[in-house]
Image (cartoon, rainbow, N blue to C red; front, side, top):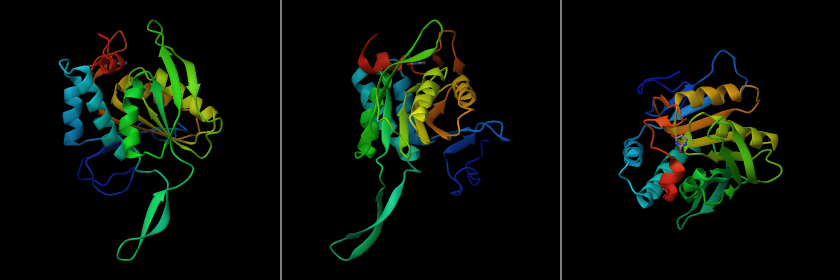
Length: 245
Ligand code: URA
């Protein structure tokens, strides 16, 4: 459910915060509800608005995508596993934490997810990177896998899937299923933008999975158009990243 900025967050229980977290499924209807996190921050909104603007050129679009992903990744990695360590400062011993093994795995979905990789690894440079290539049939809108480069066994790995546009949800759901078949049991998807239809569909498509899935995005837009584009969206993210017009 949605909650106001002054209420304690029912999902993360860390007290009032501006970021909205929504359980999209309730009452045990889904075994694996998608936990939706819409990052509400003026810098996120500013960068997203410039990305949406059709006058923004490809170099600027690429840079802003990276910056936006770094901001989303800050929220998305809230649950990343850490282990206690002690370090020596110039003055004394300090208790702290470091990322715990096994290394988190970042998985951009080719092609457009590649534009998000730099922004993610800047925040978590020790993460391993795997790749999934998925293509969407423009007529049927059905996604299929054409390439993958991932560890064989993902059990115990925290996986962060990068896909800029959650439109119909078919591609992302197929990628999540792929990771779960390899044993992943902790999956966080990071999208620049999502459509309500995509959120509903991915929740329904993943309902039989035992694995909880978190979706972090900068905004949920109005709807999809007849071609499966997000409205108002930002157009074709791959084309805008890589200069195809
Ligand atoms: N993929 C995109 O790049 N943009 C959309 O609006 C939908 C899917």
